[in-house]
Image (cartoon, rainbow, N blue to C red):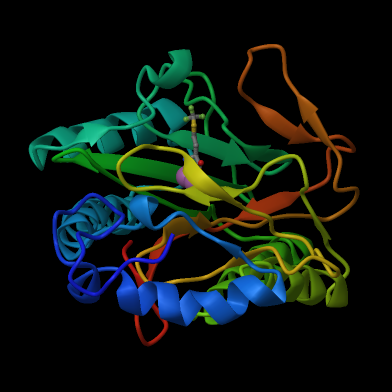
Length: 288
Ligand code: MF3
Ligand code: CO
Ligand code: CO
């Protein structure tokens, strides 16, 4: 189907093709011929969507900043959840995890060998030397922003400090791969290479995800290498998370019977950092 410049655009916007997706089609055509998968343009975010996600991300970031001084020895993970929930509602937002597919709390708190999706608990107190990931997703005016950080309790062992640091480096290196008309899988290639160099494995059972109008959208963001596949092409307006989970030992995970908590199969340490970002015309913008 060949559209003329003044025909209505195929995307349903009602705008003339030449003013709408013509440029996008021209830019992506050569990549399609090379074997890349072109992300459906109907799923790309508009300027207005990005503004909405940015405002939501400001709250997510505010929560994670606020927790810095609150996370210390003797504090329960339930207390962290209370702080997240109260801050979220005080900012007229909604905690996305609360009642999400039955998840009972306003954030995830994942300590030491917990890979992710730990459930806040009034009986679980933080101890000296613990490392904890707090994962927060905010909904503001229908827009989702998802981010997590590691926090240290008291004095860390050298092992704990190292995995926290390298996990953050992996997130940053993954983010650096994000630019338009580049390969999505470059993210996972770069992350796995850096993790391996430091002797860590990358969790394969869980991945990053598109985010914005829903909690989990297309595409999947793998944090490990996909050497042979061209895969999906990055284009402006794609919004997704990068959230690599590094393990000290095996990449294998154990899924607990509470239906949520994920632990390392060998009970060694795990660490994760997460941001939500958008592909821009120049590169990327971190929204959290
Ligand atoms: N925020 C998590 C993520 O990064 C998802 C948590 S879902 C929950 O994708 F239900 F476990 F909270
Ligand atoms: Co996420
Ligand atoms: Co998250």
